[in-house]
Image (cartoon, rainbow, N blue to C red; front, side, top):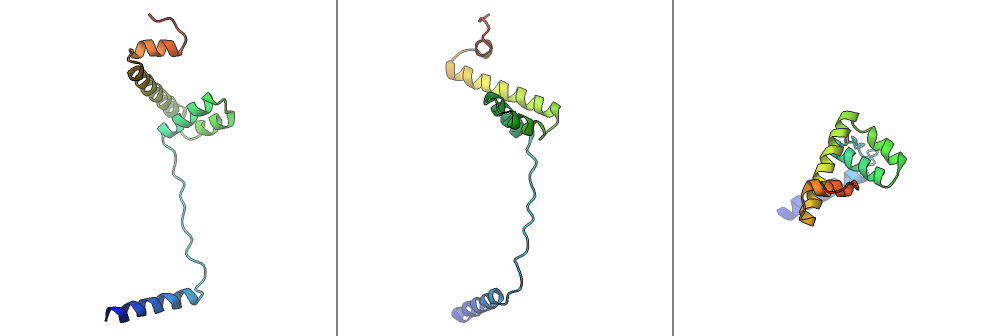
Length: 103
């Protein structure tokens, strides 16, 4: 009985495929708006690579305020990660990255 059911399903599926009912329904592709952290990562990466086109593109993804917040958050996380890696304080790492004397 199961075999009869499966053969009927296969036959029905084959008829639909052969019937030429036209193209398959179009898939609606919605582009997802990048969030502020994606924009910040793209912006900072583009700045580091001196990629003006990338900088302009990432700048258009979110508002300037949101981009500023994202860049600030990225900087904080990067300094914390480097401080842990170097076993130093975040202050000394930040000053070192900027070429400032350690206070």
